[in-house]
Length: 475
Image (cartoon, rainbow, N blue to C red; front, side):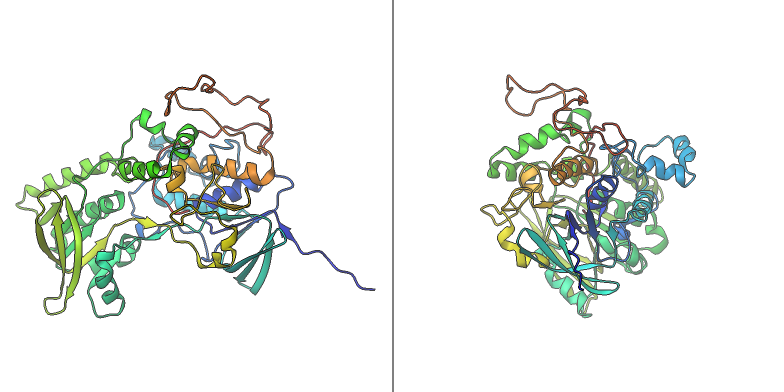
């Protein structure tokens, strides 16, 4: 007599475990009747290790953790992490609600270590679709395996962006025939190499560029290098942080932005960089104060160059330095800057993973070939089948990489996967209106316990996500 068992089919599979999918794993863990799995090729959780500078902190308060804005009673909150690790009172006495970046990384590692659904050292090689089920070919610690899931949530994150003007020097460095060129993602691991050079140039004007400039400026006297900071922006602009502006990190603004024509959305994203790519104003002031202090002993060997676009770069083997060709945007003049080392603080970009090749016919796209992401964060031909995390900047706006919006987005995704509102989702939190007034527009207020379709959260009470402000992250 033979018996057979039906293969396990997960309700959903999350691919990639950065903060966004880790938050989804934490929020889905206590939900009865929901079977999910999360796959990550890295051996463990490690968030931006190359930028784990000692004093660096998040640009969002601790409430923008993995779960609190969806379920304040969750055991996976940042406050519970502090309690369980004996640091709650110290954090309270510190009187600074912005966690250190290294502290946030430790928190995420603490959460990941408790979740049964998260599998590290598991790479997704290929995905196909058949009869309502996705087949994931994976390579794990025990060898190859095939997993089945009815839905997918892509959280593979973003990759370092290298401008085309730098391709030549990056390729030369990779082949061993060039100089020292690195993306800020690798800064800490190569800091000692940088400081051994006679000159260093940082390209970019965001938070990462500012943090690296400030740190290298502190040691400029010790090592004696020349330090340059180059940006095509007209100034080193601060992150916009006023409260009415922060209301744009809200469900209402996402509704408004998503409803605009695509060409309008594309134009808005280009004009809103100071809302999510600016520098913390305190850091800008600290840089100026440090420059002032060092200038008391004489001229500081540094240049801050604005309006300067990098049009080309080449490695000069004889001189042992890079020749950077720059163009001043307002004056229309070209000039050259020589630098032994180059740090590209040029941000990150989303790249579709190769394993999607087998399911291209399941993916909805816009006229430009990008993911056509619906308001509920799905980008599948069949609604509610394939979801994305941090790949919807062009459809949902600048709040896409925002840690404070992650719990809201995950609440929306869970609602679609579970077929019910597991965590009540705020519809209206802003005092202002972003579009023309509508006579039946909802007014700001608490989510009622009797909202149709809402259910109690895992801890037996409703939770209301309230989005917070912006920070650059990987999904």
